[in-house]
Length: 229
Image (cartoon, rainbow, N blue to C red; front, side, top):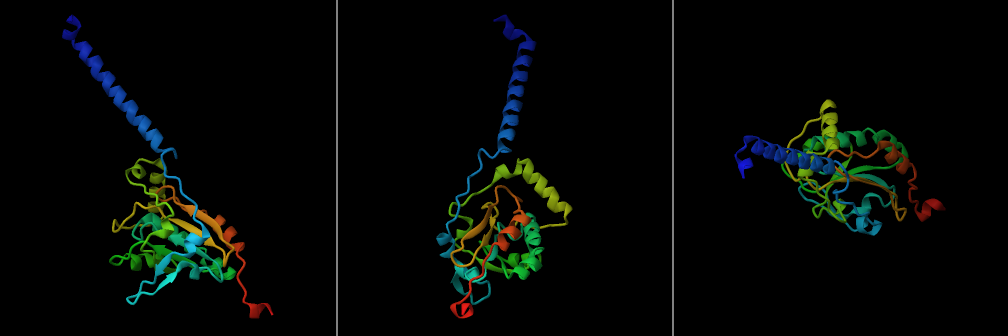
């Protein structure tokens, strides 16, 4: 047992423990930056989205079925993760940059939020050139809600998104729930269905704007029987 009295033995043991801890941390960081542990999104059915209850944001709120947003002309809809998030504001501004081309196609631009607190929606509105509605039951964030919590802060992609938005001059706050991930939908009118469904996989995972326009160009507006005659 004389080796126990050798200081180098303990030094080697501590070094081994330290190296093991560093290796474990490196492995955890590596795995956190893969999609292995990300919750896989479930595609939403048209019937599921049609039946969602939405509310207007004025004092005397009106409740209506979501299908009213796209029933005649289709729609582009952003499910906002958190209005005060600077990454969400960046994506809202990006989608709003398509507004003139969407107008030419006759396709409206909308957003839904999952909560209406303080001035968050009002402060978000300058970034988004469309009407905003409340989805209290968070159905647009389903059918299976996906969350990103602490993993988001060790993903390199998230940090790249942070710096991209910061460099773009976007800022925000920490008000409200921001862990349930959002997305973007392009809806065809009537039963044409879901033409694009983008589910945010991590904070700041923006929809591809070219894909949004391509999907919007596929929209075939509904015509009434009288117009067809």
